Length: 127
Image (cartoon, rainbow, N blue to C red):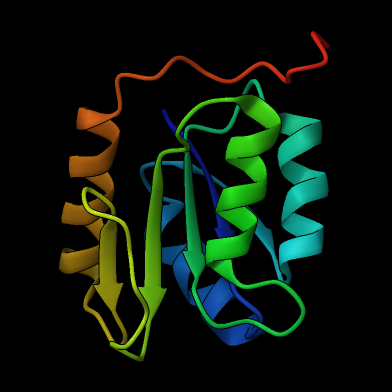
């Protein structure tokens, strides 16, 4: 069972995604990029996938993933969610436009988990 960190600044969305994903995956939620960084650092050896809203106050999902990748020197398995289309996303990243159905999210999660050949991360500091 994969562990998924879901990051969104809207509590109802976190609750909904926890219910949608919780049947098949372990789900950890964070309502900000700052909280997600702390959670990821605490559970780094257990998180298989990050699902992050692109637009959040304080730290965007894009910035969150960039920080995680800098910290762990590897690409993070990620799905970005957004209600907007103007964000430049690097090729090969998965973006799920809001609103989406449970089937669309499930397909994206399964696809990213299957194609993610990266082992679980270890911080650069060797911890």
